[in-house]
Amino acid sequence: MRIQNIKQKLKGFTIFDLFSLIYNRIILFWLLGIRSNVIFKIKAFLWNVKYGKNIKCYGSVFLNRGHLSSISIGDNCLLISGKRRGTACSIYSPVKFRTYKGGKIIIKDDVELSGTSITVRSTSCTIGSKTMIAPNCIIMDSDFHTVSPKYRRNPGFENDREIIIGENVWIGSRSTILKGVKIGDNSIVAAGSVVTKNIPSDQMWGGIPAKFISKL
Ligand SMILES: CC(C)(COP(=O)(O)OP(=O)(O)OC[C@H]1O[C@@H](n2cnc3c(N)ncnc32)[C@H](O)[C@@H]1OP(=O)(O)O)[C@@H](O)C(=O)NCCC(=O)NCCS
Image 1 (cartoon, protein in one colour):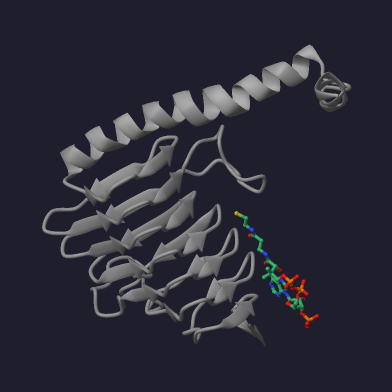
Image 2 (spheres, rainbow, N blue to C red; image 1 turned 120 degrees about the vertical axis):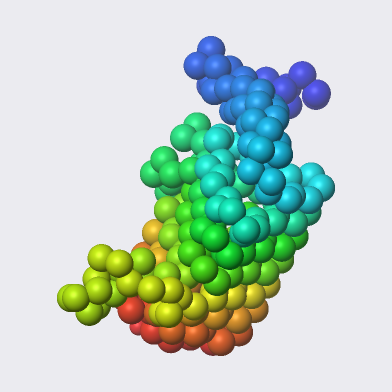
């Protein structure tokens, strides 16, 4: 009976399936994971980036902490940067954390970031616990330039605004979160959105610019 069950399960299994199994289960999850974690921890030490227990990285995380700024990552966070490990919708994009003088990035516990770029120039960006951000998303507290033709290239920091993303939020792939946005707990940002205004808790928003779609 048992042998029959095994035979049934292995029906159609080829040498190529064996390769796929070994690659996905051993090379990708174990070897790439262990290597990425070691490299991340060395980089985190050099950039003085704080991280919590049980962090898991796949691929190379980009870190650049400007002077007098801070980056902290909570417990049990997952950072997927690898071109090898990624969700089906990922175009290769590493997780990137960049702060400039005085900026703060705070990632709470159990956050999953897949190819997300967070840049904080002079304020802060907080990502609440259990939030998931899909590949190719961009979050920035500054426009870096200004609409004024005269000062466009070198504006001051006066328009920079902090970003607060709540708990258990899901941000769909290829979305952009602009300066000053607050997203409430449990809310969803649909794929490909540009969020320019605050999103209350327990709502789904989407589009360019993102608008209310439904309550959850
Ligand atoms: C947000 C999402 C989950 C909604 O899925 P859903 O509940 O099945 O919603 P529906 O497809 O029924 O769409 C509901 C409404 O939202 C609109 N909508 C859905 N996705 C949208 C988007 N990306 N941008 C703008 N509007 C969108 C639909 O047009 C529809 O509008 P209507 O009621 O006026 O017809 C899904 O559209 C989405 O964006 N998923 C993200 C996937 C992703 O990035 N995954 C990452 C994997 S790591």
